[in-house]
Length: 163
Image (cartoon, rainbow, N blue to C red; front, side, top):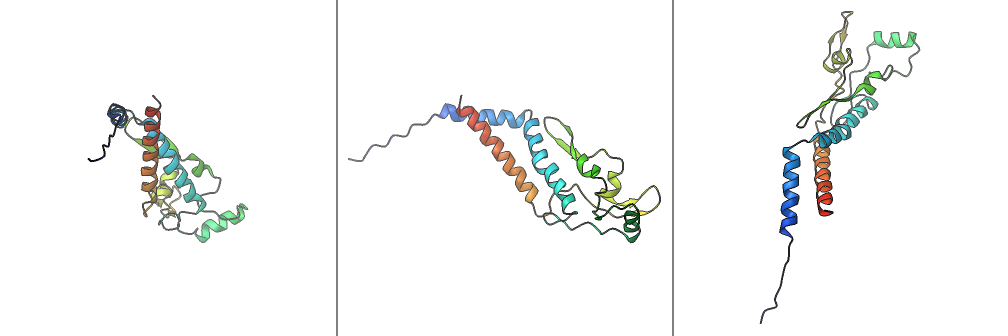
């Protein structure tokens, strides 16, 4: 005679959890998007300033021109940190808008686009492109998004198990 094995499951609980996850994903995801934006985009792009663009497979920013260095020397702004004259640009990176399906991270400073994309400033001088908002070329930012999403789902499961 073969031994008898009995497996009991609480399928209703699992169905409830899956339903809640589905409802969350198809509904308002502001909490998740806000957490991801803060944990990944705002935090990692702040690191871009500390490392002057060199982060996660991204090249360092172009060095300051001799003209800019001479101005900084006259103004006693030493050491010469690129895009960090006052720190205002770095501090301005934030969640700009969020709805139930998307989040926008950026800055509202008028002078930010010239640094992000490069071009001529109001004095006609060329400003090189120095991207400070970017997804990491090596995929590490995207991996952090997946980890944040997984942690969010785990939290939903924990909450549902407690009910």
